[in-house]
Length: 254
Image 1: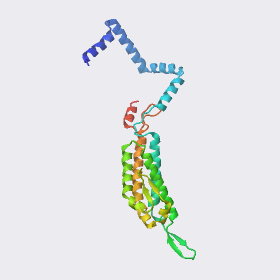
Image 2 (image 1 turned 45 degrees about the vertical axis):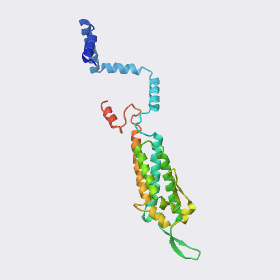
Image 3 (image 1 turned 90 degrees about the vertical axis):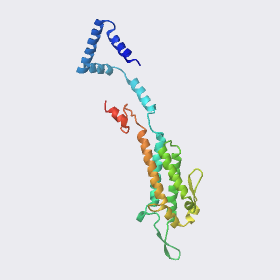
Image 4 (image 1 turned 180 degrees about the vertical axis):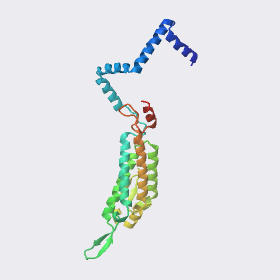
């Protein structure tokens, strides 16, 4: 770019080869500047636009905002919501299993047989229902993550899958198998006939399989939340969203 040529052209257009014309133009510029400074220019603009029917302009703008894609997220809003919902559910169902103390599903209950003998036994039905919910929620997370293009989400769920594969032998003893699609299935009869103390060792307490899956699920949820914060960086008012730092800096000037 020839900077000297550009500057020369600028001054040439201002003077236009005529001293009187240049002085006249400068006077007009000073007059406009004065109008802007004292506010009269703004009042004129406001009065003009108040009389303009801008409904068509508003409609066009609203449609443009509605249909535009200003997201900086890797995933669609629907995928992000699905990830948030399914990981919340999995974390919750895992917690139901790993919780210890008085609220533990693995607490034994007094059972009296037909002969009047009372023994302490696991509530197999309740444990099965909790594990079945866990398996279902786990599978939903796998399905949701399969739709995600976010590397953090993918890596987090891959870690979950790999950990499950490591524990597949123990899970298999309770009728829980892992398919080629990385989803789990549970056989009700096999599970209920299995040793519930083995199920307890797998699912109950800190450091258990359920606890580890819960932490990985919560981490995936946090990555989904990060994606959600990127999904709407430009709001309906024509400003950058508060979650987008560069946009916030830009907005501060207006």
